[in-house]
Length: 93
Image 1 (cartoon, one colour):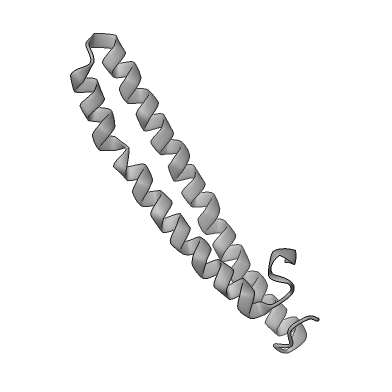
Image 2 (tube, one colour):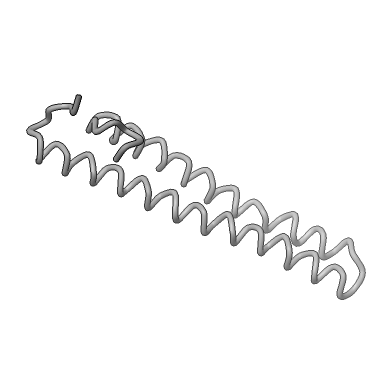
């Protein structure tokens, strides 16, 4: 895990930050529903439906990003645990 320099503590810190980012992204994806519905109500006919679908698709993309970021957090935590086991808790220099 080059981005952490082989440091289990840094990997756990990265995991915590990635989990927080994943949670924020998940909340942001849910926030797309309200504006999407507002747009659909404000725009006439098919245009409103298309605009709502576009906003909801963007929300879906953000939700997918949240899943990926959370998986990266889990991977970082696991890598930190494995590095601890492999090195006996010693930080690589």
